[in-house]
Image (cartoon, rainbow, N blue to C red; front, side):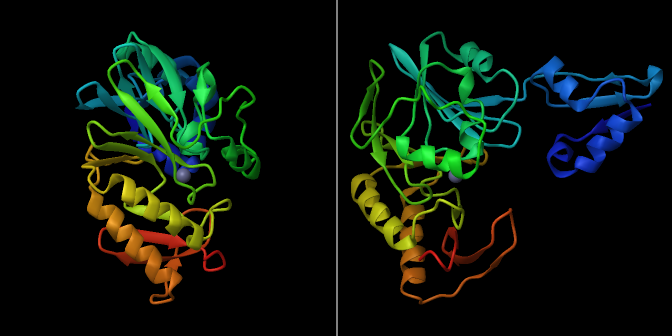
Length: 295
Ligand SMILES: [Zn+2]
């Protein structure tokens, strides 16, 4: 009898994983990960006391714009591959597992440079598969705060107004400190597209984590960003659902939500998700999560 373990259970239920590991000690989960690399489904078969698994890519991708792929890992963290005539940029490397580099090389034959939006786990974990990596060096602080196992000694710094010329596409770096001290976004002025990581959130905007700047600093970043992109059409953020970008109205809602909290016009309710305490307020299309001691 085959019994399928839904993929989400790997994240949500360690008990289930270990139950099966103990039931079938022939292979530990770590060995399976090493062996199959990318997988999206796992089947257990009691016959012979061995795991039987089917494999396919844990990464998936959709072409959202001409020569722009939206790539997701097994947790639905977003990455973007932006391909120009001369080279390609991979924006973020997700949480992921397995051979991300191999997956990307199947999508493009151009040389790949990586730009990291910010140093949270779900945007950076597979970065050490790549040689040429750019990240704002203010993010080293985040790697240290969370004691992450990332070798960042070779990372090249990026800052406001840096330009990445891909041959026929130009991407401009803009610093948007707030969610983290060195959060950056990429602007495609010609096509009026922004790649934002978590700088403006993804419907939920997390400003309650260790390392987040006070809201009074964040609002300055948002004003500056809005001035720069108010005629942009699409916000491709770090946790895209169904490959649909947000629009500029989302940023307007976010600014209003942050202003209301700063002015104490609203008091948040307790936020009960994740490992860090915070309060949340809702405004229009935005849920803003913040730390009341860091306004
Ligand atoms: Zn983040």
